[in-house]
Amino acid sequence: MLFSFGGMPGLPEIVILAVVAFVVLVIFGNRLPNVMRNLGKGIVEFKKGARGMTEELERAGEETDGEKVSSPGESSQDD
Image (cartoon, rainbow, N blue to C red):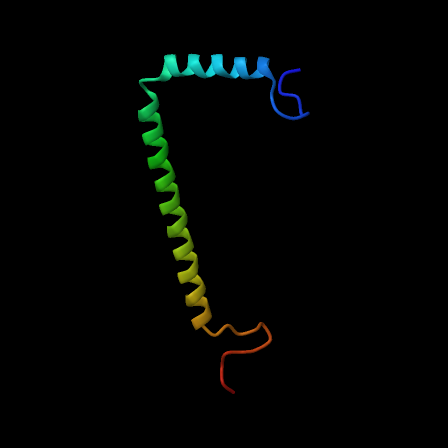
């Protein structure tokens, strides 16, 4: 049974994985460094975007903390 849940993979599974890995390296070997470089750049850009969103949300939270929010029952006019 291929990739059974009963523990470590046996010899047939290891051979299949080795053959697939070899074929992938032969076919895509010269493109692999470029793919990994682009993947790394994509991860860096994603982290920059996530950090920017976090900073923007923090700034928005600080702005709303500074404002006085009146409840619907209160009027902001002095009588």
